[in-house]
Length: 97
Image (tube, rainbow, N blue to C red; front, side, top):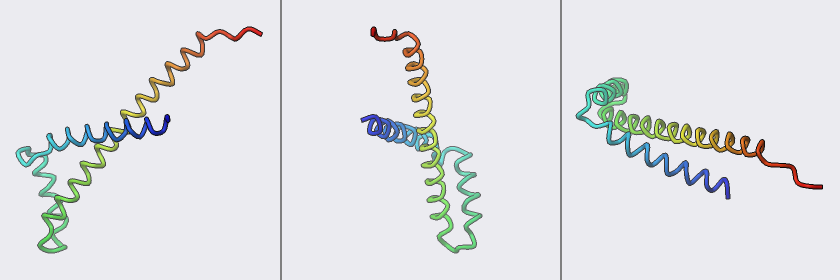
């Protein structure tokens, strides 16, 4: 149950971050165009498919960043959960014998 919950949260947060990153990375933004141009130049030796390869590489980089952001969110959530449980363990009384 706990692992399924964590994976569900991870999938939800990954989708959320990917959506936000895809909104932020458009051809209207100068840094995105510069990154695409740099990747295209790097792949020039592979022939005419250099632009498509650069676009795929940029998409993969965006996906990796979205997953990393989702894992960071999940680790923060787990840290808060464990701190709350540690605080609860201090407050709980021992059962009577």
